[in-house]
Length: 150
Image: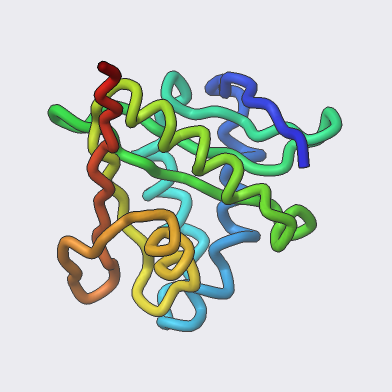
């Protein structure tokens, strides 16, 4: 599946928030945490359009992802693939591109997933390891693979 990134703008907030609600609802309901108002506030407080990219497939919004600075490393947030594009390998393609960028920049990527989320297996499959957890989230990191060309 072919995709490309397009930069997000602050005007994309509403449609990306709707995408977040649609993709996260089942996981949030599973742990008794689905609350649209709380989700709105969390997204509003963490949405950084300058670090957010739209995932575009055939001129259609298929998802979004935010990858931006966090101290000396990068934080992966708001990685949502619309349901109609899930299960097609798109998430793996997007993540592989981001991992390649992090490796090139020699940056560790950190992220968190909800407890009991299917996303945990996805990230583990792509080389992320668990660094901790709390009541609601599991924290992951992936160190860069640095190529040493002779």
